[in-house]
Amino acid sequence: MTLEQQAGTSSPAHDPAVLQQAREAIEGCLDTAAMRDLVLDRVRRNEEWRGRRCVNLVAAEAPTSPLVRRVLSSEAGTRASGGAIGRDRRWFSAMAVLDELEALCVELLKRAFACSFADPRLLGGMHATMVAYTALAAPGDTVLVLGPDGGGDSSHTAEGPPAARGVRLASIPVDASGLDIDLDRFAEVARRLRPPLAALGQTTTLFPLPVTEIREIIGEWGGRLYVDAAHQAGLIAGGAYPDPLAQGADLVTASSGKTFCGPQGGFALWNDPALAEPVSHTIFPVLTGSHQLNRVAALAVATTEVLEYGADLAAGMVRNARCLAAALHERGVPVLGAGRGFTSTHQVLVDARGWGGGFAAASRLAEANLVVNQQPLPGRDDTAFPGGVRLGTAEVTRLGMGTAEMARIAGFLAAVLRDGADPAAVREEVVRFREPFQTVYYCHESGRP
Ligand SMILES: *Cc1c(COP(=O)(O)O)cnc(C)c1O
Image (tube, rainbow, N blue to C red; front, top):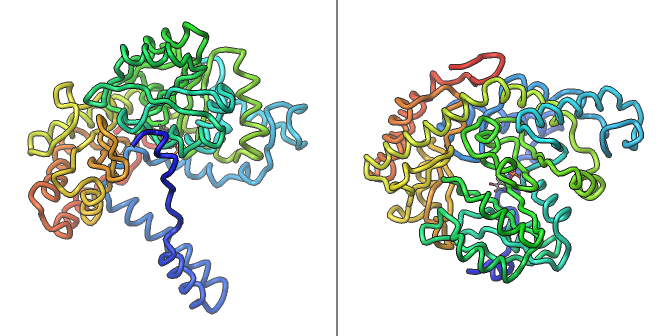
């Protein structure tokens, strides 16, 4: 399926059966306090299960520190914030202290990423991609993007944000493994199309991309390079992954809740002063009204954690990912990138086609409290029926697990996938294994593990 054809596939709406269950539960309540308790019960049950009894290997997640969680419920989150920092730049008055707060977040992010400009007003990594497609491209422009065959993310498909901007997409050529960009073919396609923008955004990110080389080619006609570092942000800040801005990227956006380990949200980073106006104008008034200052406050706190502990945490995530991959490989579970040390990030990609594909494998693992996600395999486009499962080490690393624990986890995964063990039996072992790992490390409260 080409990116163009993907435009025809629609995203599913909510499952009516689950909504029906919720409606019946609400109708069964005698009063609104009982309805409230229904809500609180789901929060508590998930916290108990996902928060304490599962091994979460979803690469797009990370646990926040207790302080970040408290700050997320702060009073700042009740204030309207439309506009930019500064008395004459906001619609609302009495924002002086909140201006100071937001300025701290901006300056802390600039420090963490050694860049000239940072903007934390994006509500998610997906939201942040719209900044690039709005500020750096015009409707009708053709933009070069990574498709699913290159580990590309849905935020850069003809179904996603670029479509809302009326931007046309062309695919960046990748090699047969899908783990690398084919630079010769890229140069050919790029020189023919001369796009104003190329976007590198990967949901599957095992090895760094040739950012410097791509920037050089695009620069021949003044094109810009945008890197969506949603997954890699914490690794970049921690020095465990190449810094795309230092490699010449014009704009970088990120999720703040993946390897960066902050509250869920997004931010943008850049160095060129000429981008300040178009980026800021895109964020307000195009994409945000109030941008959730509690989230900004929590992100500022999380950034101080990254400044203090980010290097150790990022190195630990990559070390754990390599160790987990090698341990799976030893146990006969097929892992991508075997010839290259499996991974240079927090991610590990397992080929699950032998176990009914990504959805079947992930569902079976979830029954054992091993939480992973289905993932298309690079080198092909199997988005409709993903053949892989993706594992990530952000959460297990932040909980203080190391290489010995990675071997245990590989054993659990192999038992369910390769040996066809009863997931309920494995679940009991997983719950016992997880029990002593309840503290979030790499934060000011608990320091290093
Ligand atoms: C996860 C991801 C996003 C979306 O980020 P959210 O914070 O979940 O909105 C965007 N781009 C890429 C490449 C991603 O991996």
